[in-house]
Each structure stands twice: as C-alpha cells, then as structure tokens.
Image (cartoon, rainbow, N blue to C red; front, side, top):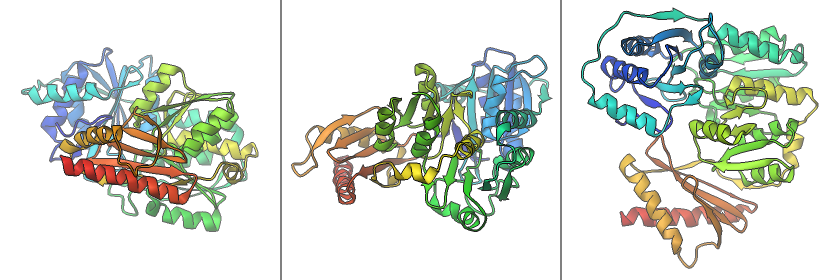
Length: 452
C-alpha cells in the first residue's frame, strides 16, 4: 500500500511497480472512468514504456481504449483532456512519471473528467488492487495521437506576440521531458536561446531534475551569467519551474505576485508554505488571496471550487486558469514570464519593492510513515499550552499542519504527504526572530518525539 500516495501512485520499478501490480492498477482504474477512451503518456525513464504496456493491458481488460501519446511532459498529458482527437475526447488521462525522483522510481499521475484523482480515491484504489486476484486479458486496443505537436502549435499561437523578442533566454531541461516540446516552441517563436541538457535521458546524467534544489541550478546560473538575461529550469516531467535573474532565484509565491500584476483583481490560491508577503501584497492590490493545503491536486481542486485565476506552490508549481485550463504547466509559465518582460516589467525592481523578510528553505525533520501524523497531533496538543518561554502566538492556521503566526513572522510544521518527514519553514521581518521561531518550534517537535 505504500505506493498509493496523497497525490499520485509512486514506487520503485520492478520492486513495487511490476507487471502484476501495474496491470491491476490499470484494470481498477478502468472502472473509475466513465467514458470509452483514456489518454496515456510517459516520461523519459527507461522503464516508462514497459510500464505503459502493463498499464494498457489492465485498461484494455477493463474495457477502455487507449490513446497513446508516447513521450510527453506532464502538462501535455493534462492538455489532452481538453482536446478532441478525430472526434474523440478522452474521459481521463494517466501520466507515467517519476517526476523529480531518482531514476529507479516511477509512478502515475491520474486525471479523470478534467479533475485530479487523488487522496482517498487513490487509497481506495490501492485497497482494491491489494484484494484483487488475477486480471483478465483482452485484445490490445491502442491508438497513437500526436499530443506534443498539438500542444506546440497551441503555445506558439497563444504567444505569437513574443516572436523575435530580443531577450536572451537560457534554460535547463535537466534531461527531462521539457526537451521534447520547449526547443521547438522557442525556435518557432524565433527567440534568442541557449539550452542545457535538452535531450531526454531518464538516467539524468548531468544533475538531478529538481530545480527547487539550489545545487541543481549551478550550470544554468553559469550560463545566465555569461550569455543570458533570464534563465528557466524544469523538473523531470516539466510541471515545475525555476526562474532566475542575475539577482534573484524567484520562488513560486513571488512568481505568483509577478504574474498577477497583469490580471485585474484576481483570486489567487497559495499553499501554507507561501510567504506572508505574497498574501499581504495581493490583498493590498485588491486581489483575493486564499491559503490552502500543499499539493498540486489540492490546489487544482480548490481553484475550481472558488473560481480562482491563479495558484502557486513555493516549489515552482504554477497553475493558470486565467487564459488557460487551470493546471500546473512549467512550459506555459515560461512564456507568461516572458510576456512580463516584453511588457516592460523589471522583475528584480518589482521584487525589490516588496517588504524584506528572512525565510528559510523547507527544513525536513526525519521521522517514519507510521509516526509523522502522530507527531503532528502531539505538536498541536503542545501548542494548546506552550512552554512559558515560547514566542507569543497571534493565531494558528490549521488548514494543513499548523502555521503559527507570531508578532513578526510565522513558523510552519506539516506532515509531508509523500515522504516520511515533517516539513518546517520559518519567516520573519527580523533575521534573529526567524531563528528564534525555528528554535522554539524545533523544541516542540523534539518534545513531541520524546513523548511518543
């Protein structure tokens, strides 16, 4: 059951994801999808095409026909749900990807009726698969579609006004699947570009494809210094982006502030790790800012529920409903950022206008799958009667873990839904206060650990 996660299914090839387990997943999923067709694509990992065949066998056995999009970025997979293919619109899509995880990992991101399939639905699917005996066989029923070309044409058309823009653009695909669409879009728009690690290679020979980790940006930073005005980097399946200027590594929450400058009083959803500066600045501008749970599935659902225009995660997931379909797409986000530059917005100057705060990166506290939620319960209990030397609490937001608001900043503790850790983050207008909040909350976590 450990492969069935909050937002997706994820495990190690052959050890957990093998012919029997994956065929069962396909067969069980078939019963959750109303229509006749399911679109399936995969990332650059060497075992992704093998898992594709296992999954197709299960889907076909469950009575579904498969639209095969081959090697695609995750956003292209999502995109197929909004398109017709020779009169056929899929009722769901499955992306076979290990995202930014090490090369032995793989998994499935599932969309049904243009909405994420996640949370209890995934856990219930897991229980169904665990209880399942042998899956029946059926004739292979697969039809190829060229989703990448359709997507490329869409993006080129949407951003035709950027053609021959003078900005020097450097980018790093990290040997992930951004490389199957991004260079062609840039070429068709006749932009000045230089790319690194464009060729998809699921062994990730140059660096790990996670742009939220600073060391993975070293090469593109050097290229930016010498030959670029702006840099972009992508994770393994191209649903997360890093944006770099000569002065800033712009995190997802600050990207949202920049993107929203060209929207009229938008509704923006952020996660609990987003800076208070983002929420305060959006409110000051007359926008509506909503704090919600971390996780791409959670944010997509919340956006739809409240009719939001934009959503973001600090890690670089950016979701556009404004002029788009409401899912996280790092390729699309690239061109929305270039639009800002074309419109004369100086990214560094805009960021410099914001109040200065001192924020930590995500700090992970190792624990176990069995213990992490028990630890969170204990932390919440301790916060009801904190130690006498604990900083004064203004209020606590418990939409996802606990975000504790203090007089001059905040601290966050939440259980990760994907790994056996507690995630913490701290922010203050005063550097010493940020350290104080971190120390105080770490003390609570230690006390919680010792009491279990």
